[in-house]
Length: 97
Image (tube, rainbow, N blue to C red):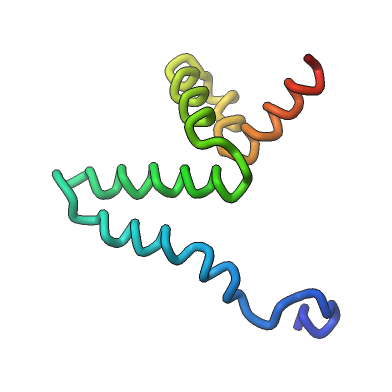
């Protein structure tokens, strides 16, 4: 019913589905590679990388920073780990520098 109130809203989500299809197919293809848990790990990493790309975040810079800090982080600091929160934090650092 939202699309009736706002003409900018699309009737379907084909754009979103088409954008996520390569990642979904890649994840499905990786389910049975290597040992039992390697497919799941591969899927997690590819999902993180795609999430970075969708937000315009350099996946290498993101992973390098997060994986370097992760071993010493507290539970309260984990909120800064998702790509969207990381990107916001990086922008704040640029403005204060």
